[in-house]
Length: 293
Image (cartoon, rainbow, N blue to C red; front, side, top):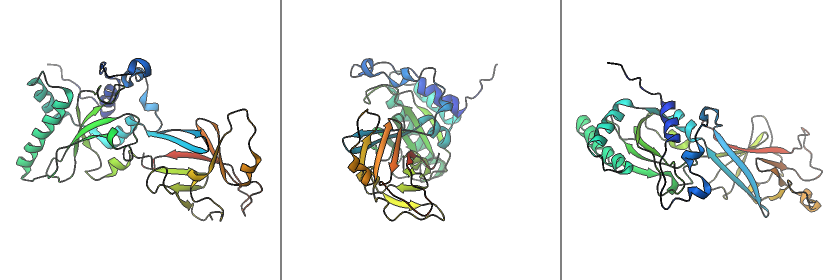
């Protein structure tokens, strides 16, 4: 008998990202495209950890950022072929069940099995989560839904029974479930890495305090001083779309402002005539990223 080679985590997640999840009558994919269709032929290994773009709405700076789902899974999760084999057997006995019903039912059965074998009661598990419902926590490039299972005597999540949203409308178009072990040992790092949590500009950077529209704290690099006039919040600054062939109001140059020369670039610009001891007068490129991946 030929031995079947166990797929790697990378191979499993690439397969999920390209899996044909069909078409739903509520799906507007014909107009906007479906995730699984757009993913065909992509080399996800070339993904940046964080994708971002900037835009201007009136005088507001818009920041759109997301963490590569491929990189997030590979960083945090490990494919569990033994649990997957049990899920496959569970699915064979329920040919009419939907993908979600299989994930939910198997998670419940698996949790009960572990509670019995390890004589623990992992209260609150299994637990189902759809990342679409919590955008402040989940900044992944595609929506996922999963069942958390606390196995092996743990009171924290150790495994995810994962589905990727491959459709267009979030109400449908999810892949068949796959089983993964959480690499981080059950702490919350695997959740934190799904957040776009840091904005920086040159040698100075700003850290979230809540939502994007919340207050931004300013910090400085080691051995550097923050200019006294550095703004408390870059999101309260006037934003200027310099990609347009229009003259800029000179009054803007008399204060801190943000210039957006194209959708992928934004610059923090000091007031006209600004100087400091290091003659580092900018402009400073603004990027957005994830400090964990």
